[in-house]
Amino acid sequence: MEDLKARNAKRYDEDKLKWELEYGLRRIYVTRNQLGPKAQFKHTRETGAYILEEGKGGINWYRYQEKILKALLLPFAKKCKEKRPRTLV
Image (cartoon, rainbow, N blue to C red; front, side, top):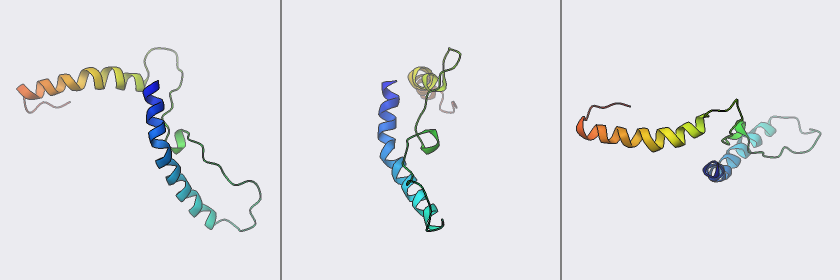
């Protein structure tokens, strides 16, 4: 969970800048007499944040990626590739 927070913190500035550019361009084409408050940036799934959702238990995509793929599969594939250069994962 800590790693997920660190990843989101890294992406926050980049995602906010991207959102501000897109939002600014959209506001140019909107009528000048727009009512209501100016939109605020929120780091959500739609704007690029990694979000973990609670399910029915078990393992989710993020835990699978961190605990199985990166920790176990990739080192194993690298060892296989040393002996068999045409190994594909």
